[in-house]
Image (cartoon, rainbow, N blue to C red; front, side):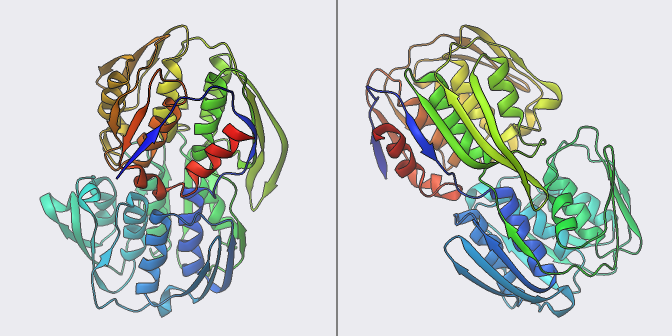
Length: 429
């Protein structure tokens, strides 16, 4: 399938509410299933990846009812899970795969996991290795580096673990397994990553200790069902933030978006590049900061993006790279090697895509160098099954000289099923 995208003649204006946060939606399902009692989730992301997490826990015998953006989970906790009779299919969801491994490591079952072609290429050993240290029996291709993977769990030992990569998924998998251990499990991060798992444990009446970059959970906890209101996903909001910043005569407000400090690196970067951006109506819902962001067309300049900000905006780098093509001077992105292990090798995919559209971008081992200001031309470009690349291309088409043909636009449904409708609303409002 292809979608024809035309440059626009006017600016973007109006207000929009983006879908629920993908990371929080996944975790709300997981903790709701692990908890005793009823959990109600509102503003759930009804996207393909999060539905994989629902289906995985349904396979474990959990009763889950979904009506659009509302999900109701009735569970008696992990002690009442059942062993699935069939392997669990995870589609393209790396989050489901890695976090689910942390849960399955503690269950006295034999369970097999498999995914689509893209997920089958994504590394799982970063999660598998610490889980094996805890006592889980895990087997898969290339010494359990890739799916399909089978798990024989149960009888875990608690550990202290220093992740070799800056990954909230690795941290979360170990903490989830720690709930099934025999004492305190501790994860010590070199750089703080998104802390939705820590917040979620507290929201479900669990015990967790956070001291600087050291996080510990005791085993044998009884989590209690609760109500979770999922904030808007700042990773989805970032596409409209960048669009408004670079398209002349634009002013856009994104309402009720998550402002967790471990996720707001994109706001910091936009401000450093000179964007006119304001955050208002800040408040807390279920331990997560929420507010509205207003951004207007801005004169932008290149900067260096590296260090501690990278884990706080890792999913937003594709759209920030596009923005850098419209900024004066050079933008350098470093310390982003983790992008090579996403749905695609995102470093190479970003470079190939932007180059095809007329930008000047050079690859480095852990990032890229982007020269601005570039005039972008039209072309036929492919999303390669990567939702964030697909949305980056769609935003780029707003300012290209000619039509852009996007191949595989349906991959955007993974995180933002109504993306094109919301973008059209901002163009026509």
